[in-house]
Amino acid sequence: MSLKTVPKHLKKYTANQHYESYTPINHSVWRFVMRQNHHTLKDLAHETYTDGLEASGITIEKIPNVNQMNKSLEPFGWGAATIDGFIPGVAFFEFQGNGVLPIATDIRKLENIQYTPAPDIIHEAAGHAPILCDETYSKYVKLFGEIGKKAIATKEEHEHFEALRTYSNLLEKGDATEEEIADAKQTLDEKETAIKGLSEAEKIGRLYWWTVEYGLIGTVDEPKIYGAGLLSSVAEGSNILNPEVKKIPFDVQEIVHTGFDITKPQPQLFVCESFEQLIEGLEEFAEEMAFKKGGTESLDKAIQSENTATTVLSSGLQITGIFSERITDVSGEAAYFKTSGPTALATDDLQIPGHGTDYHADGFGSPVGRLKSVDAPLEELSEGQLNELGIIKEEEVILEFESGVTVEGKVEDLVRKNGRLVLIPFTNCKVSLGDNVLFEPEWGTFDMAVGESIISVFAGAADGEAFYPEVVEEDEDRSTVQPALSPLEQLYQEVRDIREGRVDDPEGELERVWGELQASHTDDWLLRIEIFELLEGNDWLPLAKQEVETELERLKDRSEELKTLIDRGKKVASHAELVKN
Image 1 (cartoon, rainbow, N blue to C red):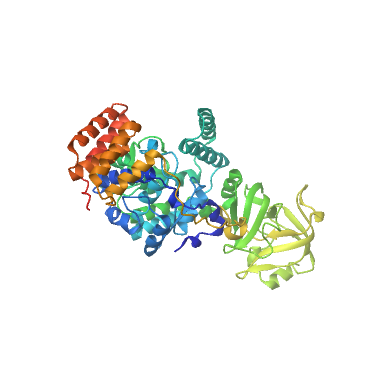
Image 2: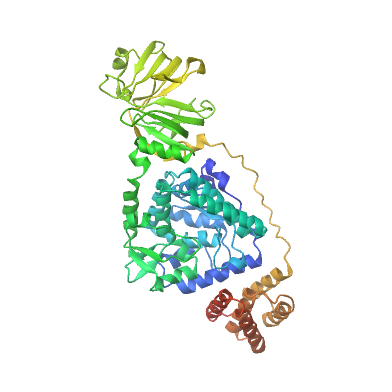
């Protein structure tokens, strides 16, 4: 699998990694988190985790190259694509449904080393990739992608997502003013308050959170970690040892009715018995979704979303667009529906030639239901039966539906797919329901969708490759020029060179670096941890080691967070391997 397998309509969410732009500090942040995670979680994680790190192209020492991950994941039926931060849920799930792991290119800043509000490469590469090497879990995540991409969200949820993306990006990028951050937070809170009820998108988001992100496997008394959120955070991963964190047996209905707060440690975690149980639970939940149930209720979900969705009729015809209106019959079932703006028609997820968004640029409308006094659905009638009803090319006809909708005009064509009638284009056509005129002859051709009922409704397009505008790909920047390093970044690089055995006099060089760090960078704790690790592991410069420990103790007094980070760093440093020359 290669990056070229990403569907073209998803490529707008991808980004180049620009590997050379990662600084020595970026790599040290990766290394610190990964060493902490591996040291702490290797005995708490699912058995696939440790071997899966290497198998998926990830090392502890430096940020992974996603192109290499892409090749490493191929034997497991997966690829990897770099993305730029938050992407819509429909797109995120579609990536996974296609067997492509989306990975953010950014890495958290040093000041956010324990937690970042925005997606980053530590979470998405080191958290998600290793467990994908398990065949059954891999099947679960792909199936989740195929189902999750169809989940319909409300308009308010779409607006909340955009506000969340804006707020998290402001926090992580680091160049926003306090006023900008405060305004973004206020907007986010307002959008969150506006959300009412539980949409299927929210429910499936919770199922994803409590399994793929924060899932445990095994028994309640002896669980193992497989969730990426736990595997990419020592603080969160260690929570499975905390008796105050409730461990609950996997139950899909309880999960979808359990909310979460991404800014706080989770008060409970759900434990599945096996990955097969996850698949069974997901399939159980899918039965409740609009793409399985269909009907007017499902169409209403699409209308409320005010975003691109697809309605599938019993004939097999798929209508993709923004659904804006529906008219019901006396029993409350949809008798007529409309879309607004660009719309496309498809069957079997392939657009019907001549019925794309350029042709249906201003929307689409059609009756749905059975013809009055006809014993079979219109889509199932033979040519002879159609002739008896007067539905003949180039002939005028009046069709009256059981709902009361009337279509009268000249039949231009009869479009069949898979042996079923799916579309009847009319000219000089008038469509009405009582005194309500739904289509006038002067409006042009009326393309009447054929279908007795709505059998499915789902988010997104039936044929995404045809429906969404094509992204013009720019030539990839293959520059390998590394940005100039700041004095502090240069010190980080020099310590890395010492650790990796590229220095002739490592002890003398480390003493010099320590002197420069003391003189010019009194607040930096991470490089002091790396220096301590080298001194400890190689039994070098005992006086300098004492000075480093004194400095680390001084920095610990600044905050509880620093105390925790430094204590953990020193603990892992005691297991460091010696530098070999």
